Image (cartoon, rainbow, N blue to C red; front, side, top):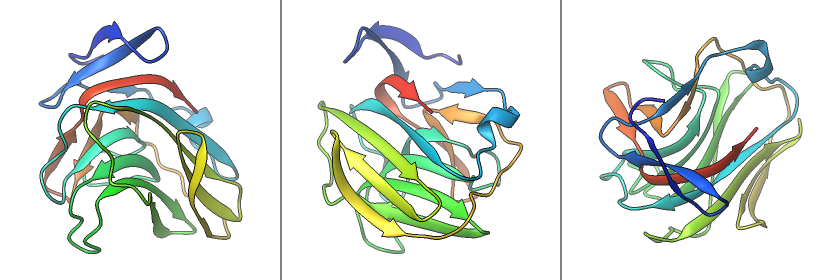
Length: 171
């Protein structure tokens, strides 16, 4: 745990991040190098959105100059698509795939976000409701990077950090 502090959360206690440098890093293990099926997510409450084209990272298997193999983030004004909202990313058979929520998200509100992949389809759920699903066939790429909560490498330039609370992370 790097600076994040425990606060009251959606379910019991949550971790609060300052948006400057707080994050949690989980040592990589073979259990995090998932290739077939995955479900991961968390309760998130955003205090401030990241600046345009930066991520507000929740859960990422990325760091340094590596985009990572699976990520759950919020993004404002993506330069390549113009989209704003919750985004689930996954590298499948060497190709980076992204699906976006149909909602942009609000500050100071809890959201329950889940990303799933079953070998055939990536789905993003918001508050327990399927929000977007797209067919992708293949295997999830793996890497030797640590799991990051509240931190993600951004566009090969710098780290992005989450500002507010994350609760009940599950993989």
